[in-house]
Every structure is written in structure tokens, then in C-alpha cells.
Amino acid sequence: MKIHILYLLSIPFIINSCKDVHKNKNEQIHDSVKIKIADNYYQIDSFLKAKLYYDTLLLSDSLNAEFYFRRAFCESFMLDTKGAIFNYRKAIGHNYKNLKSAYLNLGINYRVLNKLDSAIYFYNKCLYIDPQNNKAKIEKKEVLYKLNELR
Image (cartoon, rainbow, N blue to C red):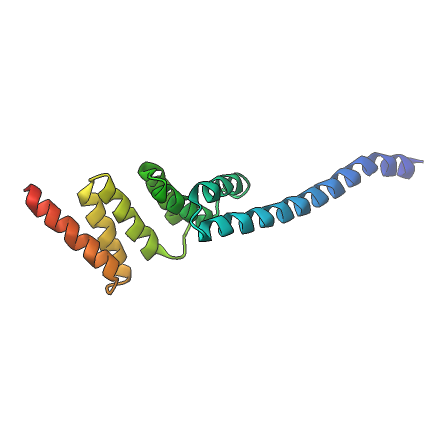
């Protein structure tokens, strides 16, 4: 009798755990579709639509450095420079794999804000990783020229 009662009491727990497994699998499928849609918008430079999908994806995976980087890139093109800086820093903080791109883009965004010392700092970080990065060299040279004009 004790075994039957114990068995009956465990049924709701088993059913709920099966529902959770099913729910997690559906969420993963749903997220993989969102990733494809976000990436497609990103590839065709539809940055507002892509950003909205990355916003949603980050709600379910807040540690995904690639999502932060792509959201930052979208924000840069949408002229949300402060948002872009925040998200590039989040990407770096979550071990984004392409640091030189994140540093270069941070430098560009700080330049847009006219925070030239910060721009130089991030161009230097980019150049430390990739000393031959022509974009970083040109950007840094232009900012140094502007700084010399201001002094």
C-alpha cells in the first residue's frame, strides 16, 4: 500500500518534468528560427529588424557574446552610439571571439561621440592584436590629427 501511495504521489512530478523537457526543446527550436531570421536581416543590412530579434534572443540567452556584438553593430548603423558601446563592451565581457573587431568598432563609436582619447585607446587595443589592421591604423591616424588640431 505504501508503494502505491508513493507511486501516485510521484506521478505529478514525472508529468511536470516531461512537460519541462518538451517546453525546453520547443524553445530551442523557436530560438533557432529566431537566430536564422535575425542573421538574415543582419546580412541584408536591415538593422532595425535584426536588432529587435537580437533583443529577443538575448532575453533567453543573456551570455551570448555574438548576439551582443551583432546588436551593437546594428545600433551603430542606427546611430545609437551609446547603445552600441554598451553592447560591444558586453560582447567583450562575455568572451567575444573576434576582439579586434570589437575594439575597432568601440574606437569608431567613441570617435563619433568625440571621445578621442577613448577612441585611441581602443584602436591601440585592436592594433595590439592585429598590428597590420589598416582600418585601425587609418582611424587612429585621423583621430591623432584631430587631437593635434585641438591642442
